[in-house]
Length: 124
Image (cartoon, rainbow, N blue to C red; front, side, top):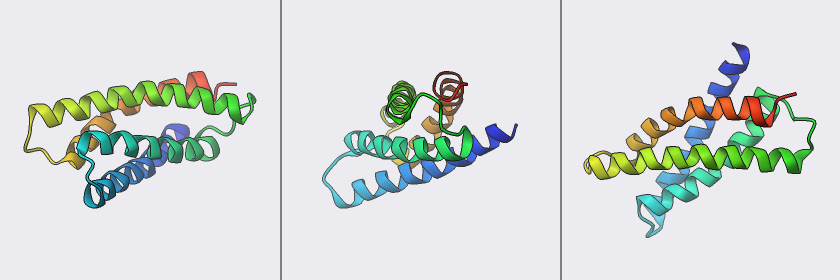
């Protein structure tokens, strides 16, 4: 249970990093919500890898490069789910703010992320 709580905490920080990056990209660049979201996901993935590596699961015995590749693979897969839900919400509900769509999509992807990271990246 402690590990799950630490994962939720790390995910919360990742969400704030994602939301801040998305907000900043939308505010200061000509990027639209779809391209900006791809960049914000990448930033959040880097933030959560370090948090999960040191706070939630502890570094794996595989070495940083292999662990990073595995984390990135799981992260990309769950980010595709996240991005699909985000995009579907923006298309289906044009009045929804991008940050609200981000929040909903992030919740959907959280369970998949925990299962993947705990079983395929940081397993011992």
